Image 1: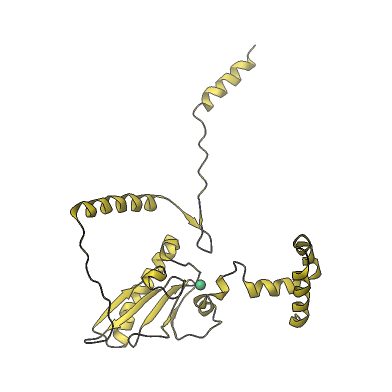
Image 2: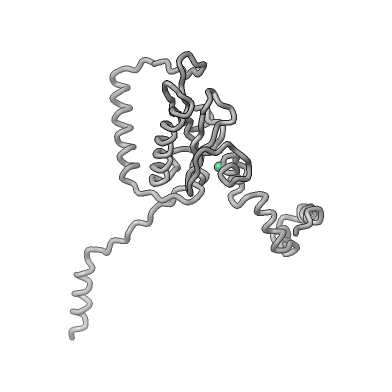
Length: 224
Ligand SMILES: [Zn+2]
């Protein structure tokens, strides 16, 4: 067991040292203490602070309604209607574009299943599926989540979508850009690491076309 008070003392001592010496000061800590600090801070620094990661790890209790190896669904603690459910990937991804394609498919399928289950469980008349990316969109927890919101006649849920006016030219420009971007993203095989950071796939080194020629030259050069 780590003596937290003793560890704090050590850390305070290390903090007082000049920067160059601080790196070496890690020797002052036992392996157990280092592990303890890492657990506290988290390997990536932010992930363990994430409330949804903690729910996924069963560190914070939630009213779980579905769980498998990759996905968890639980009742929203601030429901806008009875049955309001959140579906999350267990791995930490901040926004939807970071989610690897296979995981995205699993999440969507769970949303599909739950939209039906929730609908029947609370005897709803409709359902709204919502997913916000970024604070500007109203994403309160920076861990990808889908809202499954059962809807009832005359409920108080307001999703205010007021149309704006766009010129024909603007429509066309935006359409063109989105087509391009979507095609690139669909074609690009991007592998993601556990934190959602894309790892560029290594391009297969194409053997230069001159290989055959070079071989021939090499063989030829051996011939006296
Ligand atoms: Zn998280």
